[in-house]
Image (cartoon, rainbow, N blue to C red; front, side, top):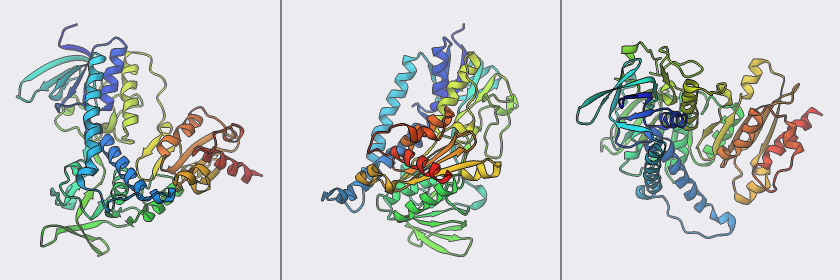
Length: 467
């Protein structure tokens, strides 16, 4: 095989591209990865998953310091974190992740190119480096895993300006710690940042045009998260759109006006209105691959585009846009191409983790979905304020909700709000994926006291209602 020819070329440096290239080399194939930036990791490492979760952990730690009195401790805490303190952990983690990612590419013999990747035809990719030099590489297959960028609605005249109005990618260039902030959009990203900033002492106003926050969640879970946010001091403004953004005369704040005529002045604004696929200037038009209105590439169940030799996965294909799912999709693509791919996992079998404070984690359909489908289902719910381990640790916010099919007893979905939700969902995921019965939770022993004991309580409550 020519030095300039590969079995597969992945365009992008994030989790999807990495896992695809690594899986291909493990199957004895020659793989290359093209990343436009001098560092690997993509948005996941540099302004998305990793740094936001590092900020979440810092915010959680700070909150717990303030709550130390529940353990009988008198720990002095500052009234609010400084910007340097807030960003310290994120910067440290990002640097470490960059090193780990680069080392993984080397260990797995993945060839990496730094430059702009553009598809010339179904089997050739052109790479343009920082100096403008171009080189063409051939490949049997191409993976597009270019990620996404914050959506900036052109028709809303939002005056994005450093120091006042940010999108989620630009947030990490923040210069001054605000005392108040408006977050526009109560989806996953907006909700995560709203809770992160609220718990470090910033007054947060959360706006959304929908009737409730995180509207795709089970209604009971959305309501539980709403209550937790309000307890944290977040003011939630639903069924509201922002009509204008005006700088105050001194240029140090922003006055917002809603579609209801209400006005609010805040130090800074975070716009979180969804994301668009990064598809500009990568050559889609030359091979006839179209995109939807969010610039996302349409693929089949195997992540294959309309061109058989070209695949796409990760954020560039849209929902659920999670690093965990992107990793799965990337590895799946390599297996599908080179042999050994399992049956594709249905979207409802993906666990979804939302790193708010408290966290939200779900797998499977919501109660509203089951009702619409006419399923004969049962439901069990327990709140963490009834769980001994939660009482000991102080993590009493939230609940566990289990949904199951009455005739077959099979667990269909699990929905959790808890400080440890993204960890706790693992047990529910196993039972859902293995098609286990609701009785699993009542007939097996769990360590006591543990947070996971909430599953047993929820299952017992469900079965008690059947009597």
